[in-house]
Image (cartoon, rainbow over all chains, first blue to last red; front, side, top):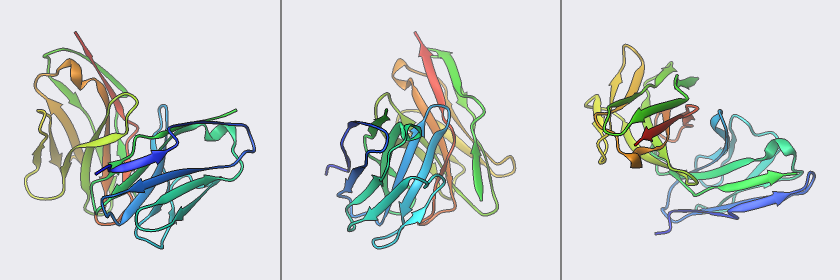
Length: 110
Length: 113
């Protein structure tokens, strides 16, 4: 099992560019999550999907959109990147309580 | 609503000394509690969890945490730390089920040789 995979690992964007972060899990988990991690602020929830076909906003959804493509895949899209979105992004999946995290995507917006 | 407070952002400790990382939470409902560990340039991984039953829970690498409902705390302890324990530790709380998890801001444990 690969667990939770994320692509890309690193990305540099210019302000205003768009991109999609991909996440996939092979553990047949119902729930999937997108977090951002910033120094001194811990993990903040951007969006989550409790089950296939549903998505909900988390703590910091502005500037992002998500798609739960199927049970395995949950993508995060930045339509017009801003320097404030420079961060490390983590995807996670959960069967119910415990969360399993991917290795992260380090995004820099210039 | 729920929240998690990790009072210490950094904890330096000498190798083989004991350590306690503090975590307090607030919630209007019963909660599940977790400690996650993040090694440099990696994602988080579960260290231990409290769902129900015994209030003292242990990990496979010697950490333990005790759920104290009256003090709304879930402090993490290890009697003797190793260099390899150097990492960032996150306390988290959830109302359970398919619900959102709230993470603390993390505590960086630095083990000094």
